[in-house]
Amino acid sequence: MTCITPPQKPDPWQGTRPAKEFGSACPQLSLLITATNLLFDNFDEDCLNLNVHSPEPNHVNSPPKPANGYPVMIWIHGGGYSSSANVQYPGHFMASKGVVVVTINYRLGFMGFLTTEDEHAPGNYGMLDQVMAMQWVQDNIARFDGDPNMVTLYGQSAGASSAALHVLSKRSKGLFHQIICQSGSDLTEWAISPPDLIPKWYTQQLVEDFNEEYPDWNIPTNDSKAMLDSLRTKDIWEMLEADNVTRKPGWISLGFVPVVDHPHRPRDQAFLEDTPFNLRDREDFDKDINIISGLTSEDGSLYVIAVLPDSLDRGYNRTEFLERLTILAYDLSYNDIYEDVTQAVAFEFSPWPHINDLDANRQKFNEMFTDAGFAIGMDLQLKSHLKHNPNMYQYCLGFRSTNASGVVPEWMGVPHNGELPYVWGWSWLQFNENVRNQTGMILDPIEWNQEDAEYADYVMTMWSNFAKFGNPTPEPVWNTTWNKWELEDRKYLWIDRDYQEKQHYRVHELAFWQEYMPTFINKSNGDMGEWGPPTKFPPSTTTPAPTSTIVPAVTARQVTDEKERLRNATIALGVLSGTFLVILLILAGCLVIARRNKGEFA
Image 1 (cartoon, one colour):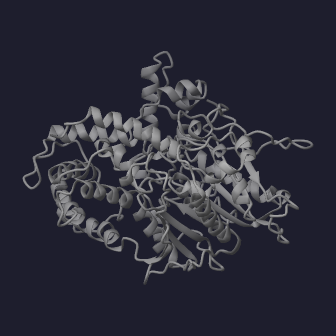
Image 2 (tube, rainbow, N blue to C red):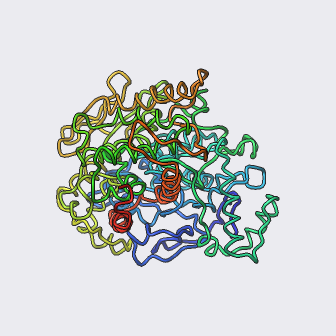
């Protein structure tokens, strides 16, 4: 492995460089790329490349080129900071809307985000890769008919959180002007690994895994420099295969992710000087950035089946609902108050009065994971930014193809990544063989229809309008005007067959998580001092939990066993941002697990 250093500017080439095939993807062990590009097998540590798609000049359907060039949209892919690549995102269709589309790669997993929390490996190499790509755009995009003074970052999941983190970073200031966050923000719990979680713990566990799998490696564990020198001599694929680091507790937790790298780097070289909460609290961020932020209607449903596999093909009665909720509450709160947390959440999220409705109870877990993983961070981001910039827009995408039912169960609705076919026009691939052949992309198991293609046009029109005008509907699109998000009415665009403007997205539930629960937990724990960040629950310990007398009995052994299962399950959570074929593969795997585990909670 030759990385774990900041990126270096590429050497210029002479003459014309043929761009007939995609560059390499960063090393990873993932089904995501195979799911969309079946024959793609070009993985290499030299993977920091980008693709540029510009409107075709002189084409009869190409929008006229503005005097300063077309607005630019830079896509940052998702994948839990550990998988995916720009090859999965063909920019042809979005570019036809009159924008220059740039899709980038950045280093992933421990190659991009390993840290020893000292000067030897401060971390954030993947984020610095993104910064360098943005700088390349500033220096070169005019040659591709792009305007470097009109740059919009957009991304999904970890890509959305990345885009939002650039708003907080002085290393990125001036390199972009707007962001679109799809199912992620800088204030989601999984966006970074804050200092109080000791990010270097993951590096220590990783090296222990390597030494256990390959005893002859004998990598030093008590000297950061010696450790890194040794790691750089190892084969990257052997390292990837031996990476078995257990993620820390949490409903949605990741491992190698962005960190606070100051003071381990000088302030002028650090990507992130402090946590997003602290930077926003002291209003230390780029306030001129316009934002679209949103999510899908059932963004948490994939996480439900990852953490509760038996939910895939069955719902829960009241007893089962409370048993599973107790285990989750134990994982997220101090052990001496987890029963109180269970009661509070159960009261808020029970499907009153139909508390034994199997589907309704499962749906409540869907709502909880959507809130915890996406909605809370989105809401906090909008409220923080609105204090300084009125150009804020919110959406919720609930459009589901009529042909999706055979692939994605109805109860899962529009899951995490469900907007990607419409943002990228994947439904147009079947009508454009040239693009399909050029990209090597395969068609999804969903047979997209004309309605899907029309909604892709609808979404891409508004996304590209935002890049051009800072307003997704400078003129009505499909007779719809997307108004700005304001605190008084919290208007947002509902994207579905009954597309319309709505207000107050889950305002009651968000108040429960942001206002009531932090107060409740601190009071229950005997702490009457300052309240902590609204989405951060106190860390759990290994103290055995007493049997609940309020909810059906769950023993300490059950809780401990289930906690370990939940921790292992969350390893896969961040990499669920791909195509619907990925969903199909995940569903198949979870179905096997669910069937094996039937009767486990009886």
